[in-house]
Image (cartoon, rainbow, N blue to C red; front, side):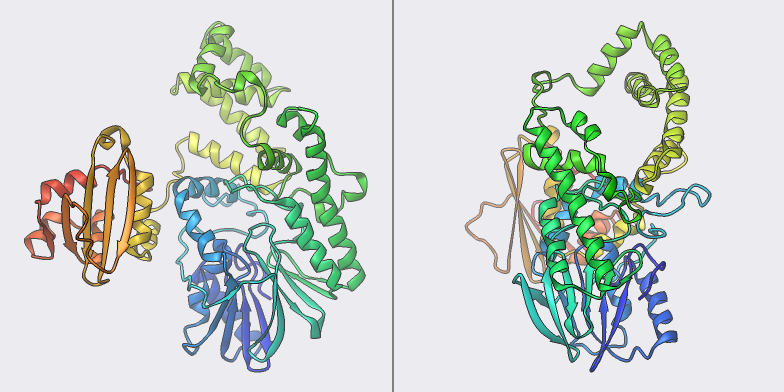
Length: 521
């Protein structure tokens, strides 16, 4: 088992007919170091299978490194939902990337970055080597023989809906993915995740408890040995999850505001163990996530049904204070014993006066003071990264090279579907157009329709003659990706004869200008 090489662990199982890898970490670089370390410890032999426990990048992106010297018929196992879950990430990838930079402290200088919560660090310059699964778990559990070893693959939704665990009954060993680790669980991730069904998580832990494993091997932090200890730890872990859920629902049904509920919900003394210390997840955030899971964004306060915008509220608060000068005086005073108000008030000033140096100074001090008080690495990293962003010392946008790597790994339909979220409706919402893109190297047509302010994308192996097309483009997929990444010019490509546009380059330019470009660092 490799711990400390990456954010997640990677696990090697020596099976009768070869090796099995459970989880591959977030990059080829980390996976290569792990494979080298494994090889110095055991005879790795041929890797016959990889098991992805779930879709998160720190579990799937290093696969290529493990398979370079293996045969082509390697089994790659995952839950059937994994691919859809990964594609869902692409929808919000721009903002999720920036927020993940903050949560994991990826850009924090070494003196400030202690760790990334449940692992040492996440590297921003990671190289990706994800390989899609070719074996899918489609049931609640399935008995399989993998590399000659009899295992049971078990669906254990928790941190993600597609999560699977591995039970080796012969060894009384359960590989529990991210359903258990040495911290209060991350029932909500501040980088931005869909609401996690926390009671499904608790029930997954019940599944594991029922097996009475002697060895519990998580994909983060160290394994645990001992049937009774494991059973007792799992019991407290699942009870902590249920407590947060049930007590949140209790107060929710009394029409209490989610902020007040989150302050009220606490673990009992019996649950305050080292295994449930809030190093990674937070009871406070988790309670808010449970509320949102059941009720959504509206907190029931009628004044929040059609509220002022953020900037409008900030402007009025500053007016009540007597102006920015007096708001800053109050914020500076609050730094002594009311950090929340100092941070909020200085933020209000900056929303209206973005260059106010005194408000910037106060907010910076508040952020650093908040960071110093945190137990959770996630919140500490987020406060410190936000402080450095405000100071102009770091840029959390996706690096250009990482964008290039991502785009180059996409198929035409995947990339064009992302255009939907880049459509500039203010400039092009009045248009009614259909564009046909033909990629001869893929032998695939992509049709992009602008209609009623939305983008519709259809891919086909055949030309759709029934459509009234306003723009007809023929180019290789490689060249088109270069256009998107601004690595080459359509004009130069057209002059070389590698691009055909029936309606002319001006029409293509106008069409592509309807889609915003992602900002990179």
